[in-house]
Structures are given as structure tokens and as C-alpha cells.
Length: 484
Image (cartoon, one colour):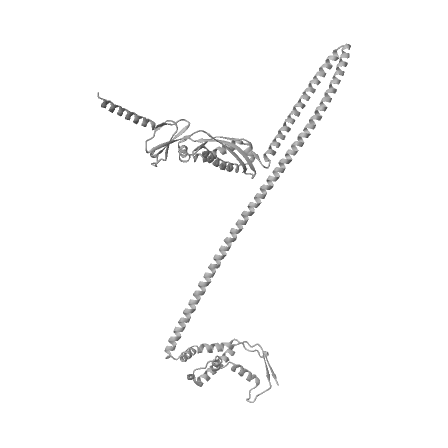
């Protein structure tokens, strides 16, 4: 085997070894405390959409050179100190809720994908600040829906509500809530402190009451035992000999001395107990008074807020109603104006049409009269002559004569009395037709002639007579004739 062959074999071996090492260097294993994120061209999901990244927790994967790359996300828990201050509760009382949250990057498939899309490349401090902002907002929202008593006494309910709300929001960015620890809740108004004092005073009073009851039971038992003892001793002493009487006397004296001392001890204990009970009642009264004052201030603040809010709402409603009524009035006025304008426009068009037709008719009448306007007017008057005479007759047709007084001095030169002249003059008081036309500033046509005019006069007088005949008859008693 020659040297050249050996060199070629060595080169091939080196190349193969380098290729194997390069391939092995692209095979990455994921530690248990990290998430391997492969990005680049990583394929599609179940819906056929292009995936932005592929997340692996545990195991290993081959990173395709050129078209893929990778990074790790740390699963180390992140401790966040949330010092929430002045959070407004449901009772409008501001409280401080210091707490500590422990979060970390989630390993759930969907949530882990959110973490790869939103947290990859961020530092631990940046992730901590982002989670802290979300926790602050959710804490304020939860506290606003709960009373202080619920938050302080039912911690489990408060922590469950916090965990549910905060975890939902943290999953949107790929984080998981691991633990919540609320330390101590305080408020500026001292409401929680007053509640604590009230509970403490109640517990002390209950304990003292229990001690007094036990002491009473002991005294009763002791008295009963002493009663039994005295009965038995008395029975034994009754059977004893005279020598035992002296012992009985000594026993009685000793018993009296003992009872005297017990009474003195009981007196001192009762006095001390009364003093302690009085102090406890005084402290309980002071605590209750402070709690009532706090409740009164809270009730006052609540009522003030309710009145102001209701007044503001009423004001806004009144403004909205006034604007709506003004808009209705404006629209109604505009509609009425449009209707009046349309009506007047229609009337104007109608009057214009009537005048136009009258003008056209007058023009045709003048043309028919040979262009003589005066003849056309006379023709119109002749057409209305019968109507004018009828109107003239109707003027005195319905005159009702109730009573007439005539001053008559006898016969006149023409042989007629004053009464006859009065009636004749009454008939002639209706003006002739020609005079009527003259009063109107017109004259009858010449072709009618004097005879026609006289005939018209007579026709008028006969019409007047007929009208007088048609009228109600004059009672002779109503005619008073005075002759001179």
C-alpha cells in the first residue's frame, strides 16, 4: 500500500469524523428545568397553519442546520413581591394587601407555545415586571368585588378568587401561577383593627363567663359534700359516748373557724372578680364605641357617595331628556313649517290657475266682442242683471214691520193723505236699477232705452209690492195715526 493511498484514507476518515461531529453537535437535549424552543421552519400544526416555534420539555431534538435555530427558556420559579396599597374594596374602604406570588413558565402544550411566542429572549427581570403588572390589575379587580370581612376572615375564598383570575391572565403570556401568599391586610380607617378588638373583647368576656360558671359549680359541689359530711358526722356523734361530745365541740369550733376563713376568701374572690368584670365591660364598651363610630363614618361616606352619584346620574338624564324634547320640538316645528309652506304654495298655485283661467276667459270674451273691452263688460253685466234685480228685491222682502206711527194732518193737494204718501214712498224707496248702477259707478247700456229702464223700475216696484204682501200683515192696532 502506497503513501498516497494512506493519505487519502486519512482524509476520508477525518472528513467523515468531522461530518459525524457536526451532526452530533446539532442534536440537542433538553434539561428538565428548561424548555427547548426550536424556531425557523418547523412545519405546520393540526389545522395546516405554519407554526412559529416548536417547544420541547424533556427529551431531545435534531436542529436542522441553516433553516432552524434554537434557544432555551428557564423554568426556574420567579418570586414576585406585590405590595398593593390603597385598593378600593366593595365597601369603598381602601386597604393594603401585601402579598407574594410565585410564578414560572408553564409546561402545558398550548401555554408553553404562548411563552415561546411572547417571552423568548426576555430577561428574568423583564418577565417579572410583566407578570407583576398583570397581578396588580387582577388583585384590584378582585378586592373591588369583595367585602373587607370576606377578605379578612375567609382567606381561602379570597385566595381561590385570586388564583383563578390571575392564572387565567398569566396563561395568555405563557406563565403559570405556582403559589400565592397574602401576609397581613390593613386599612387606613382602622376598620379591621376595630373588628379585632371587638372579637377579642367578646372572647375575653366569654372566657370570664365560663370561669365564673365553673367556679359556681365547684362551690355548689363543695356545699353538697359538706352537707353530706355534716349529716354523717352528726349521726356518728349521736351514737358516741359523752367523751366524744368534747371532740364534737372541738370539731364544731374548727368547722366554724374554717367556714369563717372560707367566707372571707370567697368574699375577696367575689370582689376581685367583680372588679375584673367591670374592667372587662369598660374595655368592651370602649371597643364597641370605637367600632360604632367607625361604622357611622363608613355609613356617612357611603350615603354621601350614593347621593352624589345619583344626583350626577339624574342631572345627566335630565340633560338627555331636555335635548331629546328640544329635538322633537325642532322636528315638529320644521314639519309644521313645511306643511304650512306646502299648503300656501298649493293655494297660491290654485289662485294663480284661477286667475289665469279668468284672464283667458276675459280675453276670449273681448275677442268675441270684436276687441271692444267696454262691450265685453256690458255683456257680463247683462248676464248678471237678473241676479242683481233679485238681490235688490230680497233687500226688503223679509222686513218685519212691528208698529208704525204716522203723523197725518189730512189730505194733501193731490188728494192723498199722509198715510197713503208714506206707503207709496216706502215702495219707492228702493232705487231704480239705473240709479243702482250709477251708485256703483256704472250705467246701463244705451240700447236698453228709457222704456226698458221704466219697465225695470215698474218691475222693481211690483216686486217690492209682492214682497210686502208676502210679509206678515200689519195689525191695525200697531198703526197709530196722529192727525194734525
